[in-house]
Image (tube, rainbow, N blue to C red):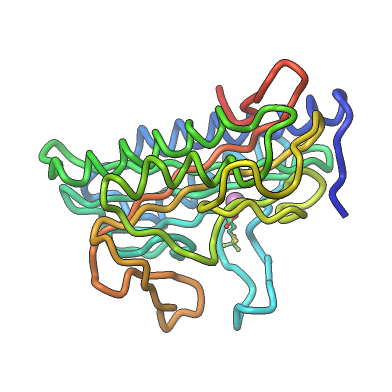
Length: 256
Ligand code: MF3
Ligand code: CO
C-alpha cells in the first residue's frame, strides 16, 4: 500500500529532515584527511541526542543482512557504493566518502546522503562523478511532479548517468519514507518515461542515485554482510534527498 501524507505530516517529515540536513552539513565540514568514519559516527550520535531524535539505522535488520546495523551513519569510501559500516581507518587525501543518514523525530523519518572528496587534491574524475550524481538526483527531483509517473524519475536519473558512461546498481534505488525508513513504493534509478505509478500530492519518497565510475553495473557484498562494493574496484558516489510531491511541485524535505 502506498500512503499519501497530509500537509501536516509532510511538515513533520520536514522537521526530521531538517535535523538530518544539519547533521549531514556538520559531517561534511568535518570530513577531512586523518578523521575516521567512526569519528563522524560519534559526532552524529551526539547531535541526534541533542536534537531529541532517534537513529533510524542502529539495529535496523532487513532480511538480507546477517546482523543488525551497528552505527548511526553509513560511510562508504572509494569502491564502497552504499551501506559501508564506519570504521577506524583515517580518511586519506583524495578519498571519496559517501555518508548516508536517517533519523526519526516525533515518529517521522527522513533519509539523505552526500558524497565528497576529502582533502585538497581531488582527482577531477572523482569530482565529475560526484557532480553527475548530484545532477542525477536533482533531475529525478525535478521529475517528481503531480501527474508524472514513477518511471519519469528513473528516466531523468539515467538520462544523466548513462550518457556520461557511469554504471548503476540495477536492483538498488529509492523508496517511500515517512513513518518508517523504507516504505512502498520502490523508486528505481532507471525507468521509462510515462510508465509506472502516477505521482500524486502527498507522496513522500527518498530519491538516491548511485553512480559507478568504472561504467559497469556489477557489485558484490563485502564480508561484513553490509557494504556493497563495485566489482571492478572503481569508485562510486551516492547522494539522496527525501522529497514530497506537492501540488506546487517537488519539495525537498532534507534541505537546510
Ligand atoms: N538509507 C539507506 C537506504 O535507504 C538505508 C541504510 S540501512 C542501514 O538505503 F541499516 F544501513 F542503516
Ligand atoms: Co534511502
